[in-house]
Amino acid sequence: MGAKEEVLAAAKIVIKSRGINEFAVGEVIQYMQKNKTKYKEPTIRSQIVSRCCVNSPKHHDDQYKYFKRIRKNTYKILEF
Image (tube, rainbow, N blue to C red; front, top):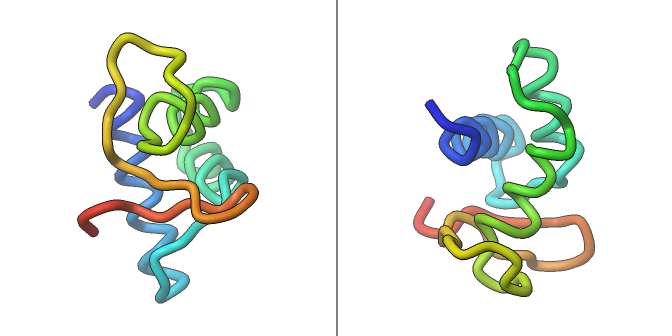
């Protein structure tokens, strides 16, 4: 599983535990670190706020439509 897939899976677990389709970046980072991810915090953060976010500035050639920023530091999963 690559970084983007692991981040998406972690975000889904965080959302299910909250009962609402929204999460903070730190919640996903904390969950992944607690579960011994091989990815460092900057990689996880970059996946959420840039590479996999539909309404972020384009900083990568490939952009995936997993998340949408709904307010500062708060995201939701698209097609959850």
